[in-house]
Image 1 (cartoon, rainbow, N blue to C red):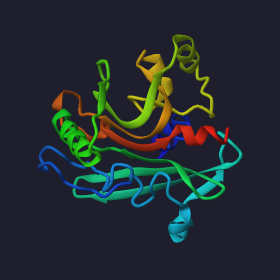
Image 2: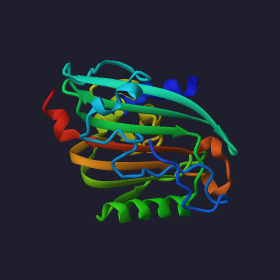
Image 3: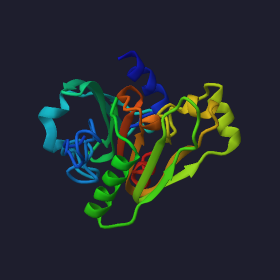
Length: 238
């Protein structure tokens, strides 16, 4: 719990999915795949309305967003356990006053998968979406998990300039920035001189996984984050 809550500060408003076993259990411990690639929150679709989920909405803690007063930020943390062990999942979203979802996110830790498993999940999502994917991998650092980042749709990831990264390394994180990094910890990424990106563009889907380092089968270091976001819609309220 303390680790997950600590990560929230660096996530900004970082904002689930049906658990589908695409791979053999020996390769995949817990890799949820969206029933729809733009549906990482179990039916809470990007561009959809919260009115269709009035009962579930009560389970979320909501407050005015620091991004814009006309947007509301909601989140819920769930603790679960399966045959592979326990794990934490944070669900987050942003919606307008009219109830339209403009940001939906699912973040899970731990979640073990190796590079082969990750590639197969990415291929599956690409097949469902029927469009190409843009992928990148994290520069390797001793003691850190490998990372893979995949982007579909009109969402763009804009690298931060070095001056901004240096400020983040000092702990100067702005709550109004939508950032993504390979560690889901922008301060640590900045100090490790790893890439940090700002969400941009239009509607799209971003899939990020922290992989098992060296194939050691250690779930504790792995994580999985899925984000459906429309930055162009959010910009209208800023």
